[in-house]
Length: 153
Image 1 (cartoon, one colour):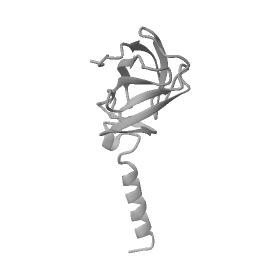
Image 2 (tube, helix red, strand yellow):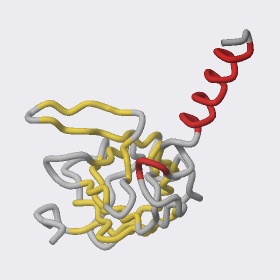
Image 3 (cartoon, one colour):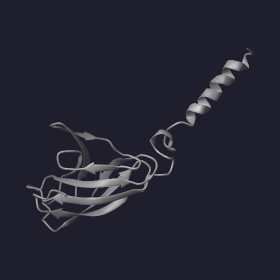
Image 4 (cartoon, helix red, strand yellow):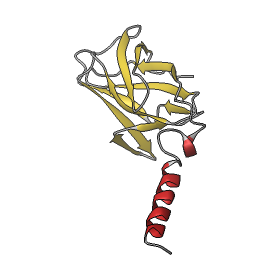
């Protein structure tokens, strides 16, 4: 084999591997960009003015995964993305919205926490939130505040 042989083989292998998976589709879908919609958004009326939970479903009809990376709201000092595993709740930096699937933010599971609210929202109010994603444009919602015993179904 000549000196260029191993280098050429390594370059060819790198090019083949670069074409697999990743942000352009590959292993996580058919390559079509994410197509996100949100449904079922609500905030149960919180028992205090300090924090509130928010629940919703993000559906992805596209061919590649996306990720919910942050949430903002002019009605809260901050909004955190939380994941619940068993009885443990922890803040996470992002949650995947799978290609051809959905991300459900539910009671007892992953959810949003609105922190440092200036006042306790009343049933019938709406709270503006903006969902930010890794690749898709932000989605702005006016989320209704519902009775504390709302089940989201």
